[in-house]
Image (cartoon, rainbow, N blue to C red; front, side, top):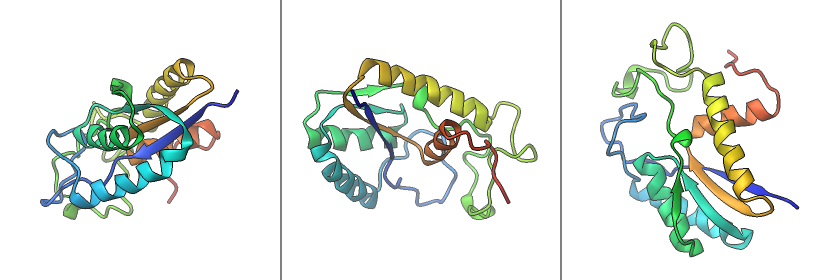
Length: 165
């Protein structure tokens, strides 16, 4: 009995002021982001998806909503454990950082309440185990955030939870 969990990053967010939005409210999908997700939903059409899960953040719920609509699913299940990374950098202008090398997880950047990669991996593992247990033998779409996908992949394949330079 095979269980498939499709991990999907939300579509592009509307962010005209170029800020690191993190958990800040109100960052919805851009028109391009919506188009990205319509393509993703088309890809998922023949995957026999039985449920869609989402982070509580607006852009992920909108992404899950498009998938729900296209796949004719009854609802979106929102899991708090799928939420965005807690970082004290949110709200800052992304032009102040080199986003290709920005390490949210570095001790020199991280605030005392910020999450590290291990905390995120554990939170994600718990959420994915819950989904797996509930939908064993089925296919499920899980919409959340880009860094999470990379972190959970590293975690499940026993790669070190650190960025290399």
